[in-house]
Image (cartoon, rainbow, N blue to C red; front, side, top):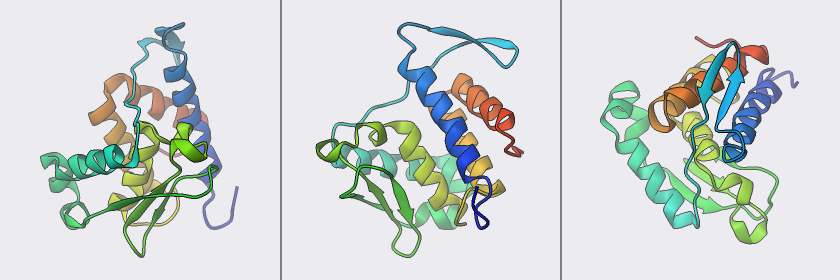
Length: 165
């Protein structure tokens, strides 16, 4: 936990839990989670940065996204390669999502959950993993990946101690 971003580790923990469920969905297509039996959804995987860029552009062009965050959705976001494989990030000053590509070991980052996480940073317009970011991220996952993914993420966040509105 960091002083400036106290929810960061807990958000990553919850997102990681959902990613692991998705990664194991072929073996466990139904999970008993948080008091419910849920069909585990799948998320998109990306082969290259151009496909990530097209996806980001498409998400920002969605009508409901434009209504929810008109100023932020109208700002173009550029996707670039990160040299290191350990993290993906959103650069607020330049409106850039930096994702490690496959060639540097970024297979884990070339997936829909990670890209939606970074889009949520852009749309929330706040650094860190505060309430606006969390609600934006959950809404993106719920609306785009599906209701089951939204339920699992929301539940995992609550279980991790993250306030979800």
